Length: 221
Image (cartoon, rainbow, N blue to C red; front, side, top):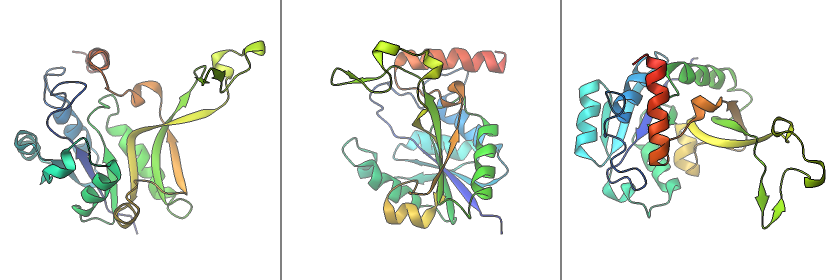
């Protein structure tokens, strides 16, 4: 049986590092609208939810065809552990399998979600969940000591050890697992590697400028 998957986009008012990033103008639209429209193109999804305490974001979700889900303000604060937020959001959904994604990855379009959903479906007998990762090809230090290279025999960056980082672009798991463990992936997680542009995350005002330029270039704007 093909698993029914619903997606959820968590957004909240009062973003700290990039002011009003979810609704501020971005490439003739805004980050929330772009992500909703990308997900609505994915026919493999049963529904797209937007979880927020912000009335403007919930109204935009409704206008665009997503399902607005009002979030208790407690779960939109900076002090609440994200594990509690994950379990709360999954508990508001109704499908057996759930997909978490974020507006801060506008360069991850519909094809990324289709690819991840296909991998999740094909791996259900071997894995308990799926999440996206990307290569880390940087020279890393901790406490003044190199972590992943020998300074006396310094390699090229592309020859550094294969280390992966979580990107949080897409995570898919059984809803029951998320509500029970408060995590969006488990010990038998399947990693799906994304390239640098698909993984690009908006965390600072500079990231926002770069993402907008790249998005406009791709869209031919």
